[in-house]
Length: 191
Length: 94
Image (cartoon, rainbow over all chains, first blue to last red; front, top):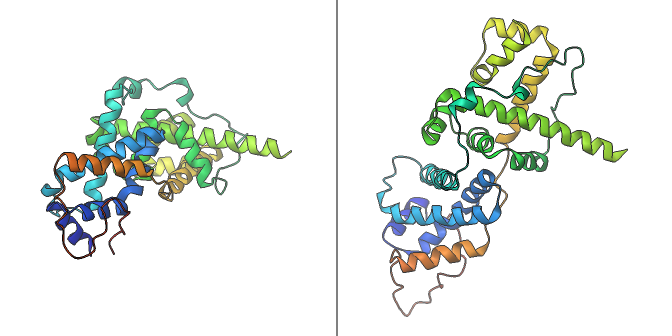
């Protein structure tokens, strides 16, 4: 059975096809929820909610975009709504206009550090992403992991494209610091 | 262009291309060049993160229950043919 057929049957209430769609897409939706929240219980609840919303709205899917894209965007909206309800700080114009001191230029002239290239593995990167502040993590996951463009993120987050770029940059800078610290710890542990 | 000016522009240029002035600074400055290389490397590695995690069975159990409660699933029609119960894991479609 093709995906198109599974969708068509699910639109008519076929429970087996609902389950097939869930089996095929659950990992990507769950991974997205987990990366954006950093919490397995929340991620599971949000995955459940995303698929429930999918099934409630499935009769409106007309095939104008890929099904996975439609589902993915729905899942992102579910997570964002959840985070807003929790009152997590979203991107603020104030934050973008008044960068923290730690965001100042790197001035290690003449004492440049070892570059990261080749030294990151998936586990360390995932761990570092989990420790990012929520606002940075959301933007980083949406842009660098999930591949959304800044104009799409700006629309989803209700911010400007400039803010989206600024927050992404801060997220990457923070990850750089975290990954370098992690690498230094591992090197010290080996001695 | 000095490091402060270059790094101030970095959020806007790193993914969308830089000017000759920025490129000139990059050629001359080890610190900023290492910084740009690191940030691009992080972005590239992020793209390679695969979906490894899987939700526990309780997620589908919860969905199944709600689908039935909300009447989104048609009742199974009894027939002489052997039917696989909905609660068993379905094979993903090919």
